[in-house]
Length: 153
Image (cartoon, rainbow, N blue to C red; front, side, top):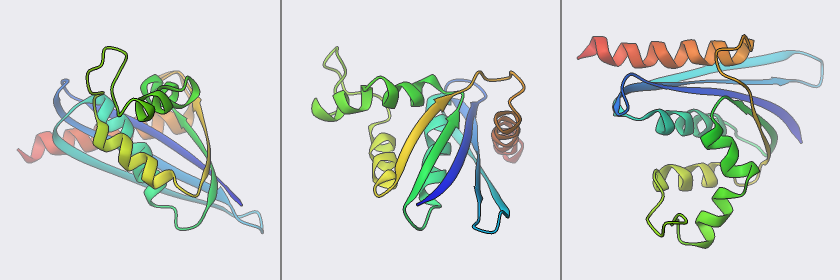
């Protein structure tokens, strides 16, 4: 199974407001060659958490065979959903939180779960704006995507 690194960040200019995500997929082939692709997209009316999710979703949706995916993001919202079992509890409760209200972004969580099918995964949190090269690049992609939506309006 191929190891793939998925780096991602989301941005929102206002919450809600214009936003975007930035994603990097990187893997090393059997000959030692490094392959990397970048993705980004802007949305006119969104939230930071939606963009954090969209970045990870986009990365998984680009994979065309089962992989071992190492997700690296500065989003505690995304990471803790997996490392602290939030997502498992939401699924078990019909996507209701401890307050019995529907969790936010249900359709994105469901889309992420579908995109992850067939892949192994691990989620790692990194501190944002702290010099992590891939996180900084994803932040640049995300903010540029958000700013491009602002300029287009």
